Every structure is written in structure tokens, then in C-alpha cells.
Length: 316
Image (cartoon, rainbow, N blue to C red; front, side, top):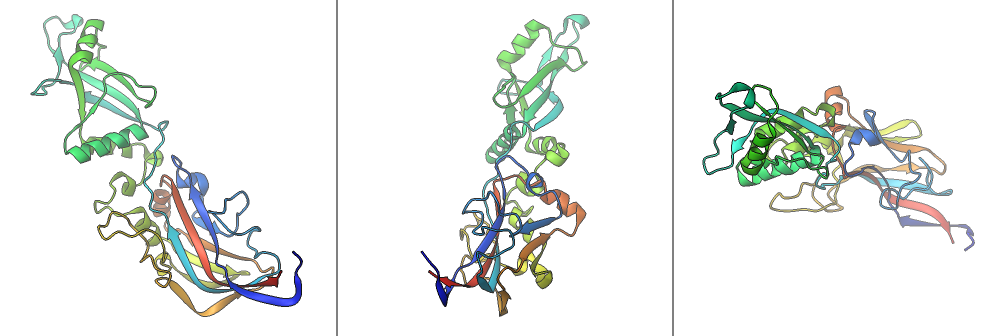
């Protein structure tokens, strides 16, 4: 359809862009710097991720009046990779009876001397997080399997507590009637020992007072709107509530502000973006230690920045 020359229309048409962290990946795989940039890299994104066609530019020769700005952060349960391996040594194997006593055997090399049985376990992060949830939900120790499991990237090595390998006969005895109990605190330690591959504490201890991922982001970052190279506004991210997203009175869901379009930051005067004028939004993490923690966040995670306002465009 051809453009009607000399006639413009003004429509309510917000522009938005996002940074997306895929499931089983960390934020640092998407953005490794201390600055998250929006409206800059728009190629290859879906309609859910952005509605711009060109980086930092409005469509065609349109102009835009920004009346409000909001930051929306998803609250989705993280998914963890199987391949990231945590290791635990000297786990005590117990006799799988009602009393759960430490498993003791007589190794061939020591005659009548009883030796305890210990295990070294290597397990994928997904498996470890599932066992941690199990321990918390039941309030009891989680039991690790005594046999390897390739599907869960799980491997166990049994030995006497003097370091000798189990004899085949003793190994069969243990496999038939043994268990490896692991407490929630031990599981947390195994996960935290993954260092840079470990999730942040907000994903290890979810919704128990350690804070949330949304809180971690909004209270530790600064959001800046640039038009041209001029700073139009710069404030901590908590200044830009989302005005969107799920809401629960039982605190099962966390949101960045009340989910109402009116419950967000509005500019006192509209900010004008002229045709072919560059603009962008940056969310900066000023503290280096906090940056390391935030970059450990596992997806799925989406962070949108929305400029809400009016687009002036040609009539077609």
C-alpha cells in the first residue's frame, strides 16, 4: 500500500527490546560485560524479544514520544544443565535398614578389622538441584543412588574408609542393601563448590529470605536511557517498575511492581526521538562482585525494556 504524502498519524505504539537467557545457560553466555544493552542488538530476535527492525533506530522515518519507561523481568523457574558436574568425597554409606547405621565390612587385606564404606560421587547440576529440592520438601536426607546413571551424568565410586577399593563380593553386598544419605546443607556445599558454574544463592535457596532474582537485579543495577549520546534519565532500576506480569497474593510469584500499566514510571515531559536518531537503554552493574553473582543466573530468564508512548508515522 502506498504512502499518503504529507499526512501523518499518531498511534500508541510502544517499542521494546530484551535480553534472553536460554534454559540451562547462564547470563554470562548471553552478556559477559557489566552492561546489558537494549535496542542495540535486534537481529535474529523473535517478536517476543523485540519489535524493532533496525538497531537503535525507529522504523522508516517515524518519530517517537516516550511517555514512560519500564523494566520487566520474568519470574520463571530455572533449568539446570546435566553436564555441569559437582563432586562430593567421603560420603558415608549406611546400612539400608531401619536404624541406618554406617555400613561396615571386613576387607580381605585387613583380616578381621571392620572398615566403613565411603563413596565419591560426581553428579550433574540438574540432578543435584532435584535432590536438594527433595531434601527440603521432605525435611529428611536425600538418598544418592549407589549405581552409575549416564542419563543423569551420575557416577559413584565406593571404597573402604582406609582408601582401598571394595572387593567384588563386598560391592555386591553394599549395592543390595546400602544407601548414601546426603543432607540439604551438604548438597548446598557441593553445588556452591562449582564456583562460576554454580547458580547464585537466590537460585539455590529460592524464596526463603535469601532474596529473589528480580530483587537481585533491580536493587543492584542502574538503568540509563540515551537519545543520541545524551543521557535523558539515569536511575537505579527500582525506579522503573514493570507495571506488568503475574501477581499472587500468596507470594508464590515475584514481580517488579504491581501489574498495572499505570503503576510504572512516567516522564514529567515526553522525550522525543527524531527520525533516524540513535537511542538505546543500558542496565549497568556497578559492583564487580555483584556482577559475578548476577552473571551466574541460569535461564530461562528474560529482561525487557519498554519505551511506552506515541509513534508518529506516515499514513498508508
